[in-house]
Amino acid sequence: MPRIEPLDVEELPEDLREKMKMGVARMGFKANDGLTLARVPGLIEGLAGLTWAIYGKDGLVSNELKRMVSIITSTASGCTYCQSHTLHGAEKAGLGEDKIKALWEYESSPLFSDSERAALRVAQGAGHAPVEVTDADFDEMKKYYDDNQICEIVSIIALFGFLNKWNATIATDIESNPLAALHQLGPTADAA
Image (cartoon, rainbow, N blue to C red; front, side):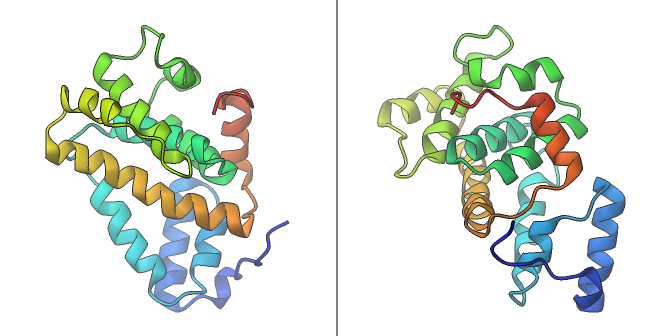
């Protein structure tokens, strides 16, 4: 049960109502976190701009890597809502089921490159509070990514830092589609 009830779509200002309807058409469900974020004027618009800047195009690193970083960060932080959404989003974006299911074996699985391992190690350490990223982790990542690419990877981690704290604190109810993805693709409870 959420600690703050989501607004009803009809309670939203007209422009947000239209954006929510477009989101429903794109995702197949009404995002409960959007309906609580809408309680703070300007928050959805700001978050949408940030999310678009990170995910709107391939950017400096691939969207596949971005999806994996978001799953690892959300899982390590303990936010089941964001974990379910990032798993659902990765599957919808075409990240293979085998690779998604092997994410918590990234250190040893042949499905992951050394560069992916370096980024995922930082994402996992950054998902914890306090952050557990070491200089050695960062030095390893610098072998594969330039400073701009690293900043893009950290932007994904930071975006989910906000979303993880928002949804875990509010105890946002997970919608059926992301919940199904969590059950189908999620790691075991001891993975994070």
